[in-house]
Image (cartoon, rainbow, N blue to C red):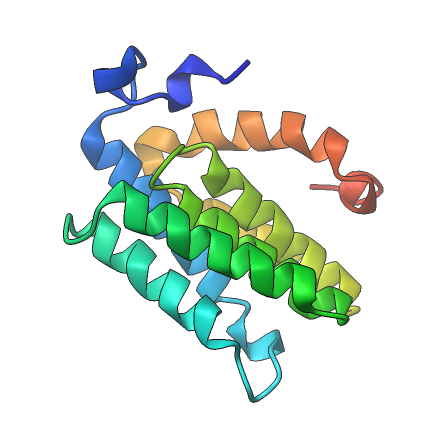
Length: 161
């Protein structure tokens, strides 16, 4: 069952449209922060998904278009044989899927941490950066929920996050 705190007001939850936009911005930024891990030839579906996320945040595209862009990013993840690239693509897929369900924003951040760990890079600094980028009014909600979600990500369990 989804956390009602991540459900939009118009769907019976408590999340305002502005908070939803803040979450997609945060998720997109978490994903974009990883682009340096990507090979030179970044799959166009990933660039497109990030663009759609940015446009949704501004109110310029429909949620349906964001869902399609998310599916494209996930397809890119599924086609990749490189675990780091797969994690980056999943992060981007979750970022744009935030338009549909705001709790996908945490998937973007968590897959970003997984990508870094798979690349052999420390994640403590990235986790702090992610937390610092969170809007203050959503910080406690997201950090608490992410701590719970991390239990499902075996690769991150051993980290002090």
